Image 1 (tube, rainbow, N blue to C red):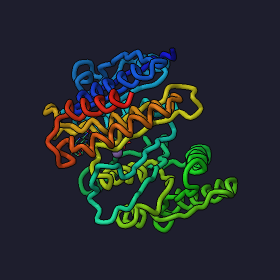
Image 2: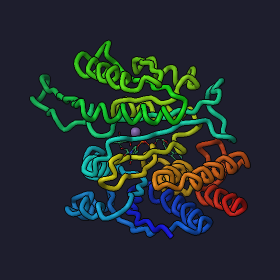
Image 3: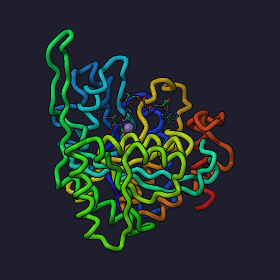
Length: 353
Ligand code: NAD
Ligand code: IPM
Ligand code: MN
């Protein structure tokens, strides 16, 4: 029996609804497999925690997380009561950085049983590899002056090490897929960091001659996501470009509520963190109608990372069967609740076991 210690951070809003749903699915998987077990340890770190304690997580929170195999997180943010940059830099971004989760892998593909909002989606199946540790997300800058001269500056940081790491990961992933990597750039308008990005891409591409490449400026690339998503296999993008592209990836699948993500520490020196693309969705939180499929698919990515790919594939099949049977939450045009969708996924798993 392989037993995994998982730190669970449901976080805020619908995170508290979809995380327990996905854990039920993973428990069913463990039960069916027989040789796999999870021990879940839940931490209340969130905006509620911040309102009580003045911090998003205790001082030794990162050290505590280092003792687990992986981290399963829902969503963070309660923008009405806690400024987003405080809550996110105090928890989500802090974990990503301090645990060296430098690669964010975010697939988007048209699932069986789903209607894309695109007129002609084709059979798209792509993965965005997002650089997850630097880029446009930096703490360098500041606000100055008051009144008419008030201004803010923010410096983007691109190191060769982190850029190469993300690109090598993208090429290796592509070698196991359809052997094509697209670079998301903007070297026509951003005069230092993006020409640098292009140069590193060219160098990394030379080390992977078996992989075909293309590059597009991020504006045109966003349009291609809508017009011809079938043209993409793996896309490598900076932190901000990858962030924006992956909400779009969710949207073309049918809902951002199904888009999964994995924040990977590829060296496996510290735990990785599995957390869907979407946020805490304050507009629907507490109603029991959040789509759990993004969190469930994220659980599938954790199964894959732990080496249980067969079980991961079964979870994706169960999701598709659930969608095909018409059991869908309102974001996908259905009437089902979070619990009903989760029950249907588990029922399929049990039937197939
Ligand atoms: P959001 O992703 O929370 O919501 C955007 C829209 O998508 C909303 O209409 C929401 O109802 C819908 N949606 C999202 N997930 C859904 C699901 N599973 N089922 C059905 N509908 C779903 O984005 P936002 O409104 O910009 O952000 C809300 C808060 O979440 C903010 O505090 C933001 O900073 C934070 N946030 C956190 C994360 C994270 O923790 N990973 C990611 C994105 C945003
Ligand atoms: C995401 C989120 C975060 C990001 C925010 C909440 C800081 O949008 O995980 O996609 O931009 O990385
Ligand atoms: Mn995002």
